Image (cartoon, rainbow, N blue to C red; front, top):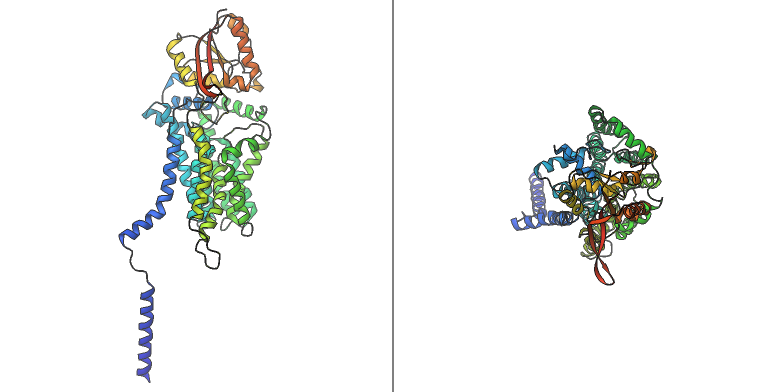
Length: 532
């Protein structure tokens, strides 16, 4: 009996061993391993390549706009190029982390391309981080789709091609989102610290990132945040505060506290620059209707499974959207950090199709359905993006939505043709900043108010322009179509001075626009020499 039992046991052992051997996958060949690696890395790699191409293509075809001139001018001062320091001081308005990074690029190559390449590079990194965020929340298909949508989104492409603080701010913001996602599942204390540090770096790019602290705590208040607890959020807040505190300390040590405080007070008390519904009418086209529709569909698909993933993204979007809508001062680029979160929501339907292609018990879904939907959505964004990254032929200007055509050429003409010591007066500070950067000459602005409560404290007012021109304090007047479109009153006042003091046009910058008669040159900047 014992021998028979032992024999049966041996046979069972042999059968189990053979069964396990049969189920064990055969070793993959080198070709199969290469195909597997290509399947994992080729899609996100292609998305990153597309993102880089759109952000670096013809990067300097159009010169700086006003904000770009200010930030690059400050970076020039940090790089040791002192010829612009009097017009663009280091501590002018915002924190200077981005300017410090740009300064290092300018030390290597002093050019418009070097400055813009820094922010364009941050834009490409943001696309990569969005892939990691989407993959962490909803899988590789969602990550690739979210990154692809952001790679071609007009809003993100246009802003990240400019020397603005919002692109790098968004990059660190997405990193904060990713760290929060990790904190809900593993090592919450470590990842909460990383999230606080990331958001602190975002605020060192631009202080408006502090609004997203509210998003983090709204997310925490929603509950069901995995392993993340209130004590972890408070620890992250302490880290955020410590990182951001380096900016006011640096300002105090530099002796520029007065300038920073004046600018802050002006921002808090200044009049509204756009109507309440500005973002509702401006951003849907820039973000893309396809992204918004897919994001809404994604929430509908997840309505029964709504968990911390969707709550995190919704908190990240809703708090700043409400804040900046109610805040009187609005900038086109202020809500850029919500764009990556929107693309992750928009990727949910694509991920659902991808995951359902071979799911047992459900109707078979075509393998090409998910890629087709993602590519179709990207195509709707690529067309308007392509139009915007080509040299602009627009004679209107919205801050943060592109360069300033004609400004670079006019500034360089001033530097090479007008005598040293010549004084210029423009319609507004936007054109003045651009001309100052490219010419190295100070340019006054007619629209700067004499009331300190109604003007940016870094701008110098001209209390009596007529008297100043009559006395010969200004020998050249600058008219530009961008200021004329925004403040026609001051453009009209400048034209009155031109006519009154026998102005003669010595320079006319034009932009070719498409009209019913074909391509037509339209004046955008005119410099007049006046003779009191």
